[in-house]
Structures are given as structure tokens and as C-alpha cells.
Length: 159
Image 1 (spheres, rainbow, N blue to C red):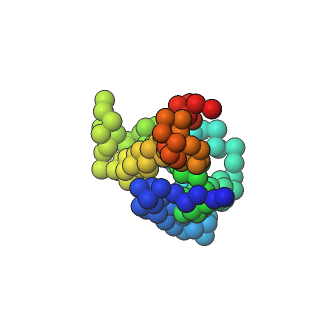
Image 2 (image 1 turned 90 degrees about the vertical axis):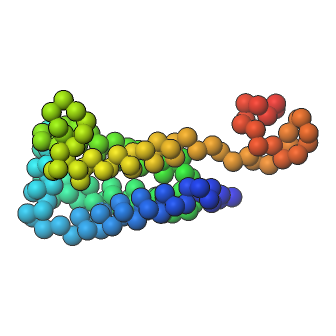
Image 3 (image 1 turned 135 degrees about the horizontal axis):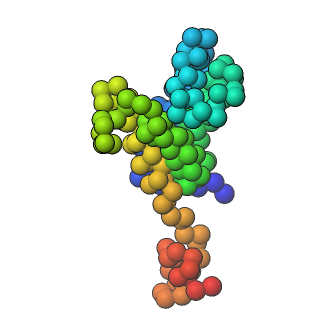
């Protein structure tokens, strides 16, 4: 049986999912110049990516964005699983911000004007980490203490 996301998770899943999905769909149709620019930026922060051709890297990045955005928007994907995808994706973006020269003020985490577009991605990392902390729903077992449906974590349930 598929469980829908908790009501508190719907708004952040919709906001981040739509944002990332739109970015992926836009990047999917990128021309050669855009692909070279995106690839160049990524290889500055992550040199191992230079082994991939620019068009292939851009397609992989776009496919990743589409998959992560889709997972966040799909109600049948558990919030914790969507959180794993979002945390990994956003972690890479925050790493890009931290590694690229000129994105931060000297000796600080505060962004420069040119670093602001990347620094803002920290909100996605925060949402992803929050989703990782989502508790599983009670599975309908009865609580030992009072016989009602148990909302206790599994280790307190007394199996």
C-alpha cells in the first residue's frame, strides 16, 4: 500500500521538485555553448568531470535534475527516499559554491554578488536533510500500553 507524503512535506516537495524539474527540462535542450559553459564550471570545481564530453555531462546533469525533481513531485516516492536524492543533489551544488573561486568573500562563507546564485542552493540542502529525518508512519500495530493504534517508534513498540 502506497502512503502519501505527510501534509507538512507537500509544500517543500512541490517547491523544490518543480524548481529542479524545470531546471532539468531547460538544461535538456541546451545548445553547445551552454553545455560547454556548464561543463567548464563543473570541471573547475570537480576536475574529474573533465573526462566527460561537455554535451554528455550536460545531458547527464539534466537527466539527474529531471529524476530528482520528478521524485520530489511523485507522491508515491517516500519522503525519506526523495530526501536522499535531494540531499545528494543539493550537496553537489553547495560543494560547487564552496570550491569555485570568487563565489565567497575572502575568509568567509558569505557569498559575493557572483556567488549568490549558487549560495541560495543551501535551502535545498536544508530541505533534503529535513526529509531524511522524516519518521515512518505507524503501521497500525496496537500499543502494549493502552491497546490503541501505536504511534511509537518501532523500538518502543514492544514486539
